[in-house]
Length: 113
Image (tube, rainbow, N blue to C red; front, side, top):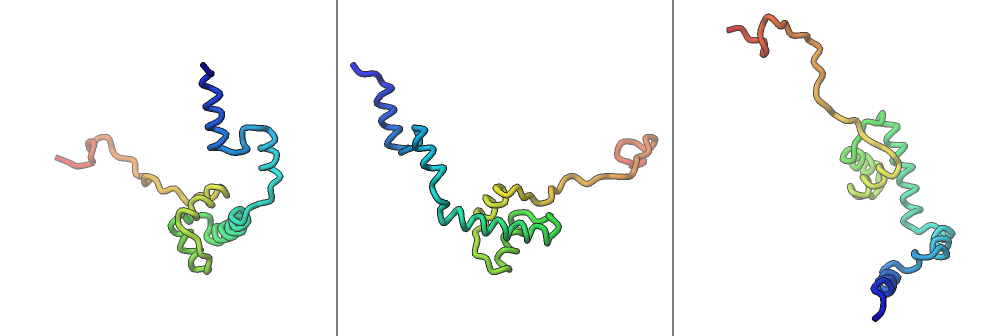
């Protein structure tokens, strides 16, 4: 009876061609950039510019709209992926900060009665 690991290695090699060896890794590293990688780099440069022009406050939805206004054809999820890759984030909206100090003599909700 044969070992179960040899058949699983054969299946994995078929599913992930070329990446189970160090040679396959080196081949992938020296491969020229794909069309998608080249376009991504161009779009990331545009995203960084738009982000800087808008004081780094735009999130994915507004950034997507701004890119459409610039005439760049880019999807919303693609914008999300590229913003994450470039390390861009919009402003996080949180709870409002209350600066008034409540009077403890007035009760918990500040109502009399």
